[in-house]
Length: 417
Image (cartoon, one colour):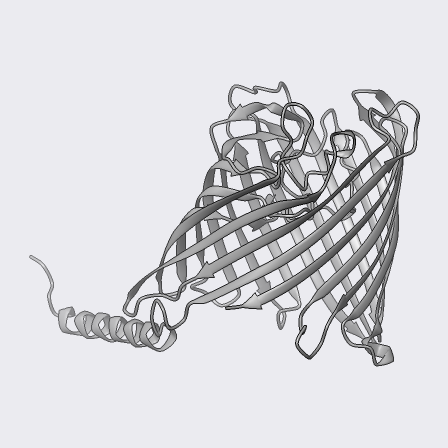
């Protein structure tokens, strides 16, 4: 016999819950078009890399290009289950290049070494939301500890797949997804995924799952993640971020630990590495100083998807992240925000990173260092409000690769349509 004595109570609770969710969805979601946002970024990019050793294949790489990045994000249809769509359209145009100086990754290159006159691509992603859980399928820009899209050139890298993000509980984010294809930052087509360690060996897909919990008045974040580049590698990650006031100072710590091993058919061979990092900072008024420490242990380099950014690592810099097998590195950095001097929008940065004991294809005990400097200004008002100018310079010296000096000038103008 079925006990139905609690049925009215259960029904009332269910109806109340459904009504609450429906009212919440109606309050938050005005509509597909009403909440839609469209933005266009005009990005003008000059890149110069001057090789400083006689064995380099080219004396320099120098290119100039104009990019257009159009992003559309709809709202959600009203109701308990909301539907929407995101879109991205990218187009790059060559302004100056030559066969002798091509190869900056601003533009695709033809087989004869000449840069393409233009290139572009477009993609859509369908999305659905129930309460605080969101599903997206299509062209995406993942920004996760295990997979961060690269936006360091003219146009951003994009991935094709699906991602799920659930934030039903206060402070807790549960995420999972799968990506099958990638379009690189200087490409207009989609290709299979591979690893930085062996770009020519392809996987069937990249799968991930993770959880992050933010607490302590939003000052502390812990995260646990696991990913699989099918038949190539598996990667687990544990991260901790914390900020703390100490009088007039703000102290911060970003700690992380990766465990890498081969997966399935092990298409690039056995993988075994452990990578730990700590990036510590202290801020006062407009000043921020950083100290970064990082160590890769084991027989393999730190694993990541080919073309993706290494921004998760503590010692990631303009041209490298000190992630070779056995490499140990440190970084010192200083930032200054000129708002403290009454000049809002102007910022400057200098940093130096040094690595040694690296094992690469050139042998063991490799050494490298990089010195970066950047000045960055965003117009605060007037007709050119939000126009951003970035000028940066880098010097790289490596015992296992070519030495070079590099300068980049990027002018970005975001427009809200």
